[in-house]
Image (cartoon, rainbow, N blue to C red; front, side, top):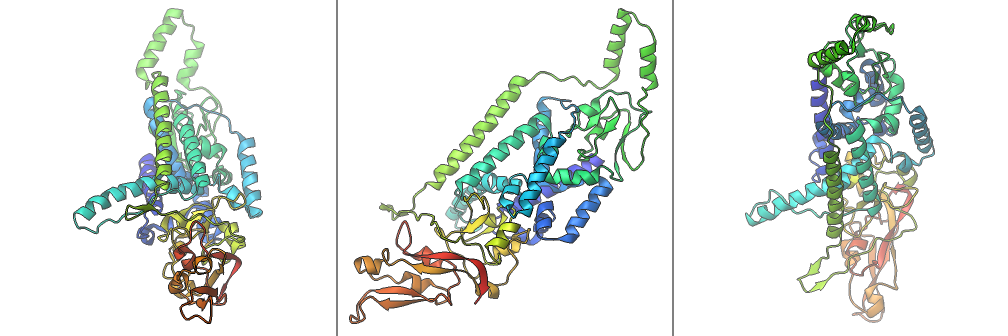
Length: 528
């Protein structure tokens, strides 16, 4: 029953969190947004004391239930572990905890958090790692599936689906997501919860509380015959059947050992069974009695017929083919996504329109509600949830080393519309504080800068004025190049006191690949 409950709850959380990254309409967040906010690291960075205390108390009471039910990366590992188990039954074995690695990674993780280098800690944080995987690998597949449905819906005069652009938002983050996915998949396929118990800092933190959990799987020495079925089915490799011990700091309370034990020797209980390291009476009798080689052979045959068959067929070739197929599929996905990203928009099928290039700004732009660059950098977990839901295609992961994978605003594909507050509504870590529409139109995240050497009226005397017409705050005024000529082209003048840095002017500027008017970010946001 414990295992069934764990599977049901884990499936609900896994599907729910995954949908948060796949749903580009923002509808799912109205109902399931709380699932992101109960993740461990976002709750810590958001100073969500209630969630943090509940998770700690849950671990003290029930053990590392968080790792088996709430954490999406843990559930994903169970999926790959289940696939590996299909090809090789009873394949796990006890191994000693690699504490030097566990505590070493935890130390680096905590130092990075305290130093404000959250992009480094996000590399190994479970929720952040899964978010990157979902946003970079699962979301494109979901988007392509949506576009297929939109294609047929359009031809049926239906608006049930609409086309969504699918592209790589940042090649560095995409590569990190692919590498993380492959490493975790292989580790889980071969060895179960290796990542959880050697790399994951959240798992290590919870292990301190799980050691003395009130309820835990316990071995009843009077019933155990040391058949090793529990040890060979423990995905956490934490059951030492020779000593009748369970390492509760690594146990993720999956319940597999309980369901596999056909003697009823393991139960999930608050009872503490004393361990005297004495052998079961049946085993003791076998050791004392002298037997001939023929008797030993007979004994082996009887034992093999009376206990669960724990031998496994050698399917190394099959496992190798599955791994090669998996890696090939991942490579095809990456190649397809890269090819899609290179698609050119054409003007009436006659001429290719040059894409705008990402601008290297002196000061990066962070979304409204982020307070400022420092606050955003220290609280962002780089989970990519805001990137997933941004309907204006403004947010994309940073490629800068110090802020790697953390979202930044860029205006090549759209601009930050004053009527949109999606990113502030979904951020679980408090990096983007929730704001309303009135605040969105008043927060100055940057200001527009005009480059006369690129502007069309200044270069070839062409009339334009796109930037002024599309400015939502009226911060741009057009002035004649030649005041004495009433037909003179006009160039833009920016009123920085009214500009909020939304990027509408940069986006609509016809100059390519670099706009003649662009936005420089502000270190600290302010209300205007």
